[in-house]
Length: 273
Image (cartoon, one colour):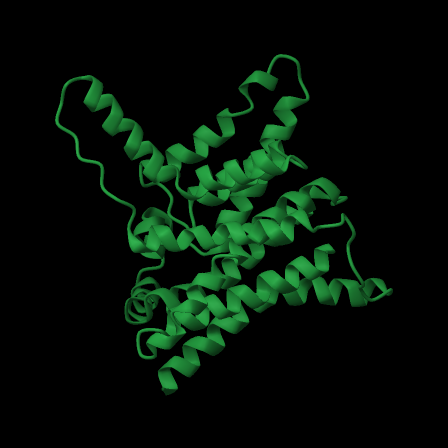
């Protein structure tokens, strides 16, 4: 499969996931769409890491993600918290400085472009550190730095730390299928594994511990592993694209715009229904 084919699969799965998110409450038969939707995010992270390796201008790549993160925030917030978002917009318009003094309290959870941008920056920092003899053994520090931001509540974004761990997995284990699969499993369930580690620590200290079983939603995350089928079929090619530079750029921007545009359409349809 080419990179273009992976983008199409990811976009379709994301669309199905968001349809399930918006309408499964009213139409329960749409719940399986959310299972299929688990395939999308690992594919997008894989494409980010792949783009990092092949782009001719990494800074421009990061700026593009930042621009679409800004563009996509209101559509994402309207899908996640429609009533609260409208109230928040009115509040920010009346007191715009609050957006700079208390950004996370105002913005809430940030959209997936923020997660993908952080994944790109983390891999970029790891790559730079691995190229130097002194810092190559410290290349995990960028992951710990981003983890601290999420853990202490300074940052909240869609998929959060899972995206950073997935990016590190695809970057470090490129071409090694077993390690990639294990890394993805750890990335998806990292919170569960951390809790399990604390439980074991308390057990060896003689304390009473109770290990909770995975929740239904945690089990649904196993569908994310299906993305490995598409990732392992990737042939390293870009795929058929318009030969003209303008056409190729239009296709590229179309995939970026698909995220905020389809969310706005689903939000509008949900309000109509």
